[in-house]
Image (tube, rainbow, N blue to C red; front, side, top):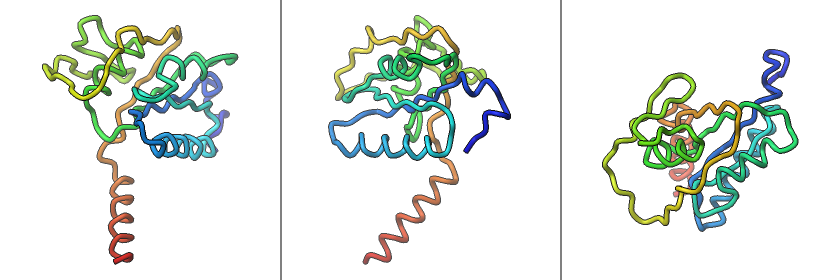
Length: 166
């Protein structure tokens, strides 16, 4: 387990895992299993939120995460493989990190996401205009999972399992 002794601020920090959401129940089971596995590893208070299609949405999950605590910092982790419209535009806007014109949103390490994509997103009912968190603390927004060597290990395991099952 990660130790609070290394950094006393940890007691005031929560982690919010943000998933896309799906109508399929397996998506909820997967993100909840992932969150529970992370909870076993860490002493952070951990919450789960969905971008759309499921509850709790991001503002509700963040409110639940900080309720009755002294949490003043949230580390928001998009549990997405790569950047897309949700990770570069929608989620930062809901977290209150996006500028009014959605051009540039910087996370705490200064990394900027360009929001001037010119893309039109199809296939989802988006009503994120009214969704915004009401958290007055610090929000650190991380990168998505990305092309991480640990994911390559998962791919290798899936391929080997598939070959063994043939």
